[in-house]
Length: 227
Image (cartoon, rainbow, N blue to C red; front, side, top):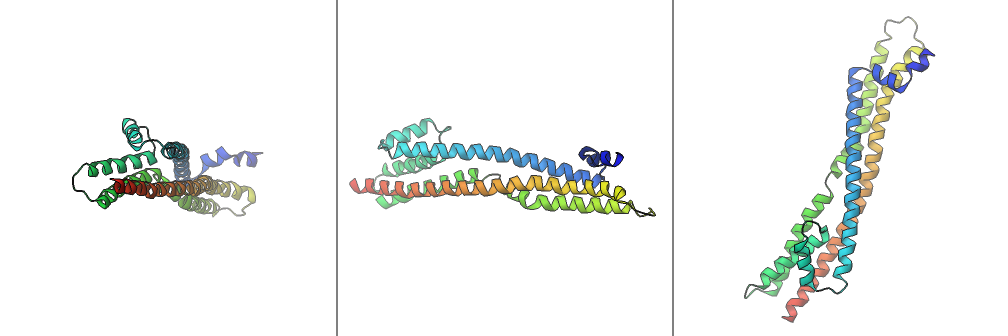
C-alpha cells in the first residue's frame, strides 16, 4: 500500500529532486505557451482565410477598383492581408499615374514593389510564433530526457549505501524521473503537429497572395495600355 501511494503522480513530483522539478516546471510553462500560441495562430489563420475568400469574391465579382480601394482605405484596421496587399498596390499605382510623363511599365513595377513589401509584412505576421512551436517540438523531448537521466542518477545514488536494493526501493525514483520525459513529449507532440499544419496553411495562403499579385499586375498593365 505504501509503494502504491509512493507511485502516485503528485507524490512522485513532490519527491523529485530540485533539478527534475525545475525541468518539469520549465516544460509545463513551455507547454502552456505553445498551447496559447496554437489557439491564437489557429484563429488567426482561420480569420485570414475567411477574409481572403471574401475579398476574392468581391474583387472578381466585377466591382470597380476605385470602390474597392476606397473601401479598403476606410476599413484599414479591419481588412485582411490580401486586401491590404491590394490597397498598397493600387495606392502606389494611382500615385504614379497622377504624375505626368510616368512610363506605364514604371507604374506597374511600382505597384508590384509596393504589393511585395506589404506581402512580406503580412507573411511575417502570419508566421509569427511558428519558430517557437518548432523549437518546442524539437527541444522539449531532450529537456525531458535530461530530467529523466538526472533523476535516474539521483535515484541510484540514494541506493549506494543499501545492502540489498529491491524494486520497491528503485521504482519511485525511476518513476519520478520518467515523468519529466512524459511532460517533454506532452509539450513536443502538439507543437510539432501544429507547426506542420500551420506551415501548410500559411504556404497555401502565400500561394494565393502571390497569384493575386500577378493577376492584379496584369490588370494594371492592361489599364495603362488603354490610357
